Image (cartoon, rainbow, N blue to C red; front, top):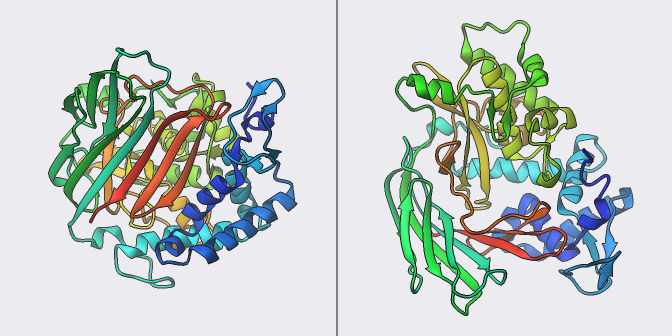
Length: 433
């Protein structure tokens, strides 16, 4: 199957330069943006992008048509248009190859400072240990914009927002969904849903406020039932697929099979060393072997990397599952995925490949182990395959983009059709406290 963007690249270069710069600012200059240094940050981001173009990063020019396809243009005619996955991955690869310093001096440094912020530490201070953190109260707001122009008036629509799960953490959870005229609101683990007959209004915004007490996560749960053991060791589940390639990779030499913690550490290290963590295009995934594809291509996003780790765990008979939620960093409260693996007597232990960024791709071993078996504050909303938010009446097209930016007190993430620019939905995650 053809890989994006090598074979279809020009069709996906539809995001304006200004919007992609917003993406760079979030990943490499979040603290500058929060600290009133936006003009300096934008100049630095522009220089970063210009260096990438000089290295050969491809772009298109804004025009009313591209080939035979009518394109939705996000910028003025003549503005450079980029594929955000292609462009961000170029910056990551250039950093790994020593061709550009943006990834290490800006993106890695930003991620490290986010982790230090919870501990009151500054740049250059010691590597913080998440287990040292005390319980902390958070108040957050989720806002989700929908464009329902594709639905006829009177259609029964069901729209959802993710909601925090009451797991071992957080506790003292309160969820307050905003009212929507004529809508019936229902709640279940992982989401709140609004169901209503669509009227004349085609732009809908849903709002949900939540308050909870979060603690570092370092294992939870009693012994697994036989049904749970079967569920979390199955060789096939969504993006978690155990095939011959995965079994071969998981067959570690020198790993003590009686010590699951050792095996988990080795599997985590395998993925962290072999995979670049960036953006991937989901439209060209072969769903029969997505885990093997992430391994052989050497590229994954947080969801695909966590799913690959889960597949390797299951290949060794270790129960593992995919988890989704949000960072709770004030600088960058983005959506995120990580994995949980089961060790008898310790429960579900979190493993997060954000650590691969913190270690600068393995070049700084001081950060090794920071997010293996323990995490700092997170808001968990999904535990696959049993608890997930879903998209309700909204369906994703085959090809779509995700573009993020800093907004006051939070982060905005837009999901849109990569070929037409049509909005799928737009999330704003706001840190109220």
